[in-house]
Image (cartoon, rainbow, N blue to C red):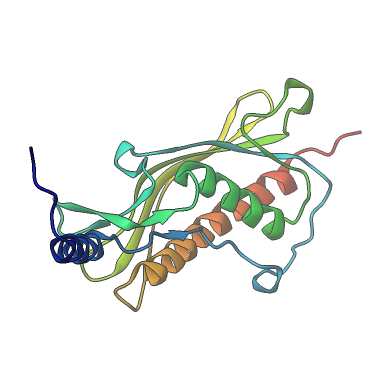
Length: 206
């Protein structure tokens, strides 16, 4: 028969197990959201008439399709934030931030998120393909994307390639996410300017 361990041995074993559990505990995960423009950041332009904007689909390069925040350790090597993650899908977050920004920059409440119902077809559709959205070793955030504006009958009205940068200022994830928001603001402003030009040049509806 196995002999029972003495009380002092059991106590020592308990202390050792507690110590090991303390050593192996992980730090808490921090979650982030993309900041969008506020009404204080915009000066509402004169809009000739009401129109509906559809935002999406917005697609991201596959390396960005994850909850971990991605940064670049070098031109060829990526780093994933194990304990610094997006609070929601980055694709959804970029789509919603763009929609919120455009609703302020145009301004209009008639903004739809992709996919929308067939009974709510927008007058203009904004599609975006993001090819890079991360921070490099120096802390500079880069947003590179292709974007286009389509008419209600899927005619391509504008197609452009964009690249925006913003300095994070600090080497931490919160500063990086704020800088990412700034580059998304710049993209939104370009899209809004193109939309307004199209609307102003379009024939008025009877």
